[in-house]
Structures are given as C-alpha cells and as structure tokens.
Image (cartoon, rainbow, N blue to C red; front, side, top):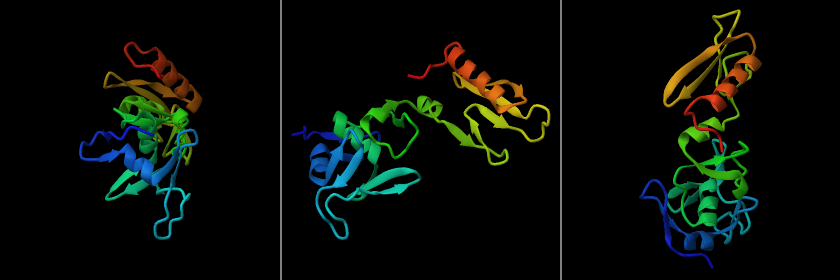
Length: 179
C-alpha cells in the first residue's frame, strides 16, 4: 500500500493525497494509463480517466483539474515535481514514467521538436525563423544564452540555420546542455 501523505504541487492550494489516487484510479506507470476504478454516471470502471485538451490528458478530481502526467509522476515518486514535467519523446499523450522527467522551464523548451512557421506552412526546427523580406538568405538562426538573445546569422537553407543553432546550443560557454 502506498504512503498516504499529502503531496503538494507548485501551487500550494492544489492538494491531493496518494490515498485519493489509489481509491479513484488504476494507474499504470509503465504505460502511463490512468483508468477509473469505480463507475460513476456514464463512466464505466476501466474507462480512461479525463479528456484530451490542448494535446494533454486532463483529469478532474473534485473541483480541480490535473494533467495526467503530473498524477503519474505523483503516483510513481510520491510527490509532485519541483519543476515542469517534460515528455522526452515530445508525445504529450505518452505518460509512461520512462518518458517523463522533472525539468526547469528552459530545458523543457529546448526539448521542443519543431514549431509552426509563417513559411509556406512548413515546420521549422527550434532556433530557426523565416523572414520573407530577405530573399537571398531568408532563414535566421538565433539562441538565448544566459537570458540574452544571440543572432547566429542568416542562411540560404533551413538545414544550414539548424546546424548553426545545434552547434551553438551544444558549444556555447555557460549554456546548459540537454540531459
């Protein structure tokens, strides 16, 4: 049986005990699934808990809504994370414990794979932006180092700009490297 101590997340007012999790859900930390234990209304025992909103599974308990990945972390570790839960593979619905890690905001942002761009509906790698007004070298690379924006140059191709960003990210003095 799990420890019944109350776990507190970043917002001190959001509290939930491991006992409540045990009584409401069947949580499989290896698959990341959170299923209801008891039927309620139209919900059957064994149904997936919560619904998907903005790419994340969210579960309402009483009057509070929790992200499923935070509940899986709580169930596995016994406490809410100190920082942000990062989905290592980028899949917001993969809540398996081996895909989750407790990181700071900057590390979580560096783990993003691609971002939407205004460039003919293409996806650009992190650190690369498109500037339509520059016809010869429309792809810019940039990075933030110790809170300061650093322009890395303008490039003809996405690949060149991305290589420059990756090099700067891994080589910049004082810039934290990925785990």
